[in-house]
Image (cartoon, rainbow, N blue to C red; front, top):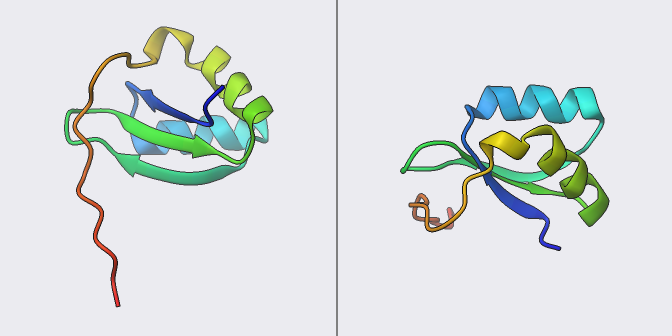
Amino acid sequence: MSRAMNINAERADVIETCARLNTPISAIEPLLSGGTRVVMMNGDDAETVRKAFKSKLLVGAVTRNRWVRNG
């Protein structure tokens, strides 16, 4: 199972929920198409967050921000 998921929720809501569930975030970014992409540290934490956001999980294609390396 993937550690990454796309959620129809604001970044702050995802961060707050993950903190409450004690599930550390590896990476997080807002989606251009709306919502938040989050990557958890491990598969067990990802499953916990999926269950918490089950009705808000985005399926299908989403538009992500273009990643640019600084430096």
